Image (cartoon, one colour):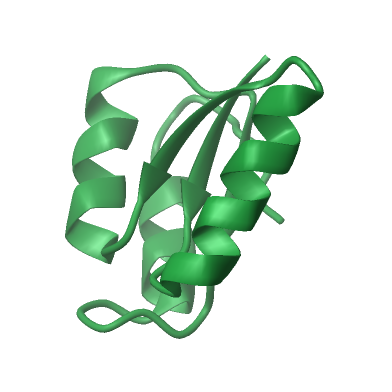
Length: 76
């Protein structure tokens, strides 16, 4: 399962990536909304773990953009 993690906090992002990878998940970690939106156009993800407070684009704006896409992806 490929997961897109969108988290700007270094320690939290590192811990989540490590824990998920140790449990067999493939994780792409982005620290900004712009990075996340770019990754969503380049790869298919089974789930997005989305921080709501990012430095560049609010998480809810990213969620709206994800929901405008024809392919469904769950967002937590």
